[in-house]
Length: 397
Ligand code: NDP
Ligand code: MG
Image 1 (cartoon, helix red, strand yellow):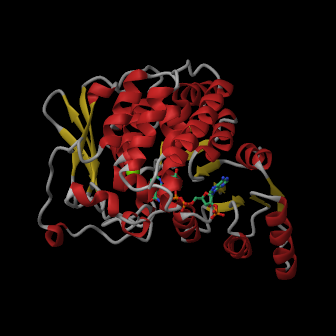
Image 2 (tube, rainbow, N blue to C red; image 1 turned 120 degrees about the horizontal axis):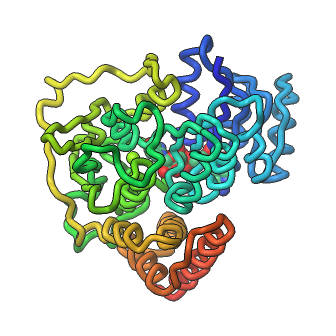
């Protein structure tokens, strides 16, 4: 029996995780769940899965959750705040941690799980983008097992069988790898007239053609910052330099990514676009379990297309490559400025094309430091958020 903590249980990945878990009560037990403010959803999950502990984002949310659970006769212990998140991620009772909080808020608990040597199922790519070296060092020092949930990285992992279930300790991809081919759908604005992009609404940006996801990652997919963050994520997970990572637009989202080898072989992982496949893969690794996802019918798909990304249409992708090449805290600055800019876009304070302007200005304006400690990374994160706020305040819509 594997005991699991799901961080971000009420989100898109959290709900898909619990869907897979519920299919296998003989294999998985839920130790703890967390949410930020969606207390009713978390209460329903606690009633169904009976975790020992549940964590929310504020004292008021904790009070409400506790009273809902009392009324339902559920004895889950309720707590709130970052320390409590770290505690449920690192408790000795836990075997596996699904890291599915969105954004920088996931860094501390995800790192706590890595330091405690857990099996870490990593969806929260922002944590790795911010603190790549520190995070990978923590994984290697504790002997944690790190399994990627992001569909592309899960596909790459499956296409590198020579890993034997461990991420490389050295900072280069396994011998024989020529390139990592990271596929991207291109999102909802792949073919839209660029001149009309500033008029798009949050609703249009969140309407992804293939995937159903949380709002932040949906906007990231529309700007292709999501792919940019994934390039940085692939660098840390697979030890590949920027030059070894290529983004390929593949609008059907059937091939989830590929690895090209020096002998001319290309290995790929295919499937219907449903996150329950990578979640089930990582939960059961190295075994295979049923996930609820329909089998892929290739004759129904018939056509798979591939082309190069247009960096003028998607400046965020170029910004992410630049941040990876700059190194140090540049990716943390990029990530923080992006989180603030995306929230401002969702709040209708800035237009879609101003997202990349805000990020570009913040990364140019602030000095890049050394990412040698979490404190240094968090200081840069805070500085970038303040600079992004100032930049947004100065932008007239
Ligand atoms: P959602 O927005 O759907 O869910 C986010 C979860 O995090 C919710 O449980 C939310 O709680 C919680 N949360 C939000 N803010 C905070 C905070 N400040 N402190 C603690 N918890 C918080 O996001 P997704 O599920 O879409 O994405 C989660 C992560 O997985 C992201 O890093 C994303 O990049 C990554 N990912 C997602 C994919 C997808 O298909 N959705 C695919 C690949 C990666 P509440 O509900 O109470 O607000
Ligand atoms: Mg992805």
